[in-house]
Length: 405
View 1 (cartoon, rainbow, N blue to C red):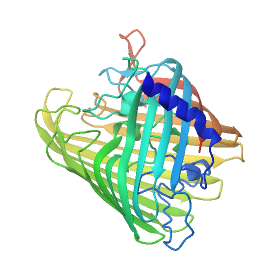
View 2 (view 1 turned 90 degrees about the horizontal axis):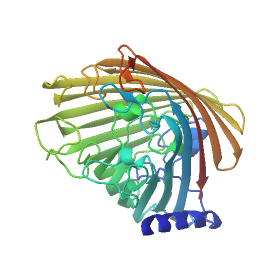
View 3 (view 1 turned 90 degrees about the vertical axis):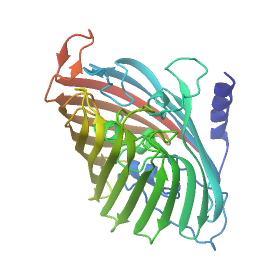
View 4 (view 1 turned 30 degrees about the vertical axis):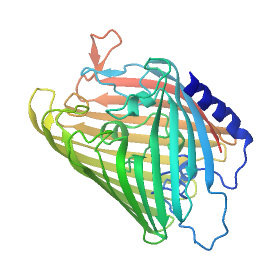
């Protein structure tokens, strides 16, 4: 219990501290000094709006501490596929309250020189995004609460280039691991079933100018601590912000993975993901985001017992509207094709539609109400009795999170 006591004590004390700058919570060197979290709330939605500080700028306190507490009540009609795999990412509890994430970030990221970031998280979600080869630290010996650190790295910045090494969140996708950076409560299909959660390796970020940023990295593969395939995965990313109206962000991951995910033996094959994001800010209040994922793996272990090439792809669209300073709305629609059943355990075309209403009663506190409906072209969802199946699923949820720092 010592770990839990220290973490919660620190969190309770943080709101009493003051700092020179407001802290961003999902920082990695490719996203430092940007406005992902703030822009999400204000319907800007650019993942990396990097502003490189000049060495001649007046120095500020570069050590920053921030955090948030996120919890929900969820009523989910069906939470498993017939394959036994969860049909939701983090919101997979059928009826009840969940403490998803209690997060704190310690960051020292000066514009020049050495820095670091450490981001421990306590909560239910850590059991989902914890990488293979690492058991989340738990004082409860249960699958309810645990502690994990999706970001922990050192960095060195020199002019427009930043080199970093350690654990990072992935670069693909319009949605992310941190709830305060998204506009819906539930994570979408693409985030949970088409993309990785985290990677361990090295990453270099180069700010070409105020419109273009490029990232390249080498890591141990999708959601792995060790390189179980003994062959590294390459990540490439670019963000081009043409103007305040339009931005485009392509990402590629490619490298060897085991035929059966989350294993350390057996055949392996090359897995490749191509992720494309286009953001259109029509006004200060209205934006639209389109996200496409196309991926494949050679020598993939399929549900029918064969090992061959697997393909999965999907597209997501987000319409976000800021009604006023207190109310926000977000609509998400997705279509995902698991052609060979490699990602969900079922050959299916899976669709979902989500509507979310957000309310900000006070600074740093947001409450969300969400309704979501899922469809499949086959009876993919298992009923509560574990016997009957259905081709549809429904959920209603309330979420609240409080940010500090």
